[in-house]
Amino acid sequence: MREVRIRDTLSGELRPLDPDDEIGIYACGPTVYSRIHIGNARPFVIFTLLARFLRSEGYRAKLVVNVTDINDKIYDAAREAGEGSAAFAARMTRGYFEDTDRLGLGRPDSEPLATEKIGAIVGLIGDLVDSGHAYESGGDVYFRVRSFDGYGKLSNRRTEDMDQGEEAGSASLKQDPLDFALWKARKEGEDTSWDSPWGPGRPGWHIECSAMAEAELGRSFAIHGGGSDLIFPHHENEIAQSEAAGRPFARLWMHNGMVETDAEKMSKSEGNIFQLSEALDRYGREAVVAYLIAGHYRQPLAFGPEQMEQAVAQVERLRNFFRGHSGREPGGPAAGTRLAGFREALADDFNTPRAMAEAFELVAEANREEIPGAPAALKEMLELVGLESLAEAEQGAGEEAEVLLSEREEARAAKDFARADEIRDKLAELGWEVRDSADGAKLVPKS
Ligand SMILES: [Zn+2]
Image (cartoon, rainbow, N blue to C red; front, side):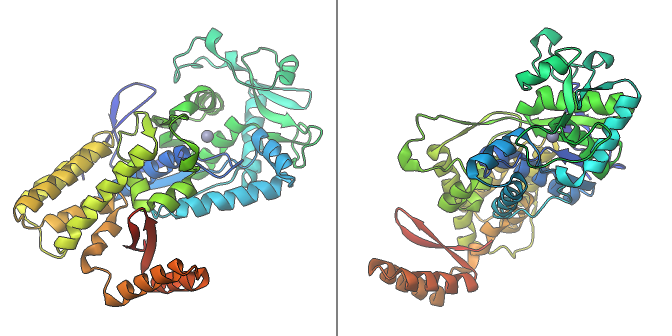
């Protein structure tokens, strides 16, 4: 078991994980007011693969990724869609599960919905009211920020630079502009509400995560993660609520950088590839995963067609390697060194680009001269980052599949799309996915 170190946002230090501890990881999931985009997929991929790596090293890990299905944005989007907000949120939640299923990385150990944890949320707010850290006002409940000494320690902001970003209407109900909502009284036009000691309403966003993390992982757990855009106010407020209520809460904070798009470069012809499902349709799941681990998780990651084409080329390079090499050879020392380097890189603040550099070095070396055990070592590396399907290309598609593929091309040329779809389904049964690209259709092993 390697020592795994993670950079803690709170202390700024590289901190080792305790091998005797269950590594509980709570990562903030999406607010389901639309289909998710590539930026939402980044924490999903990073924390899923981190849990996978920890298990492969012998750690006990439990990954929790929540779904925020109560939120102002959901009310607005549901209204626009002419749909009830509960039905709308449920539909978007299903869409989120479908889209992330297609990444082929499996599911987190637990995926709580805010709507299913109202009891825990109301209980935690009650504790804060009882201890004087929160107060009721006009049916809302607010957290009294100045009652908590450590406020600002995660984001290192001065209180004068803090804006809770809450609706202007709540200002008159707050004792201090710095305070933030734990519970919001039901408003005109809101079609969902829950009972509470302070009247019907719904929880604020921050308290949902404090309560769900505790319900799933206990009062103290190893890692709290999420995008760096959540550091303030969301995570700062989670710390304040949970610690003020006497919970030790997260021992380490881990934040991923943002996925950044150049709006001008994303011309209309590119379609909406920023949406995860679109990117998956166009580039396939391996390229999307390869793209998301191409940069160090803490750094911002540029997104556009160029970056995705690079990821496609990388994936093809790996797949081609397995077309020429069998993954069933026994391991050897030269390949073993690269594999150890790969694992070391992941153990060092989950450095996926350094790990993938080891994989590509091994491919280059093994393409120059025979390296015993290179395919097996590479396959193990790819398993750790969810790309093991690339190793399955070694057998080739086989004659039957190739014949079907050319029949499908003929059907498409003749505009017989029903027949083309029929053949596509037949290929899927044989384990092949058809991917249409600029230079014709290709068969890719189904993940
Ligand atoms: Zn959260």
